[in-house]
Length: 173
Image 1: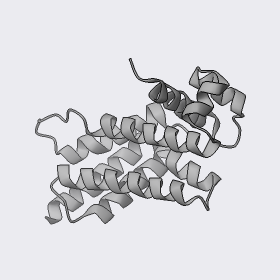
Image 2: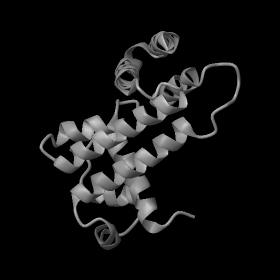
Image 3: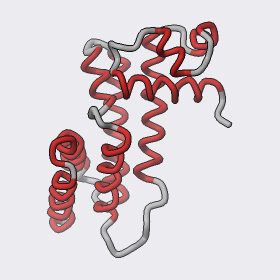
Image 4: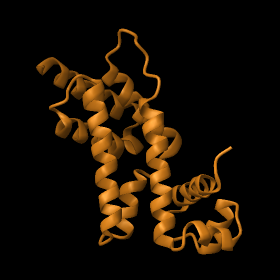
């Protein structure tokens, strides 16, 4: 069973993903976390800490979802990774990237901007390493970000385009 801080972070992540960062008041965040107000503030003494904790939790879940147990079939791993990003968008990110939404809600928050940068860098690094394209992190970032931005409008077509662009990268090497 997860520890209290992890359970709180999971509940906060769900609340922010469903309602954005401006809408939920402290009582609805406490309810989403499933703890008393005192316990919520014990583990996360400010709204900013709640947001950061929720995003850290989301980062861990995303990395696990996208990169765990990759199949060893004939299909290039890059295809599988782009398909998993699409699946994440379908099941977890109906309103778009939560990290970008957090920075948009508080554009001057240096810790949020740093967390966004770390998340995107970690994703690009892993995709590049696993797909055998360690020197193409910039291109991979653009493809993954484009997929995430385009997915709500074009869904499967966005995935197809990302795979096509990934194939172009693979064929250059």
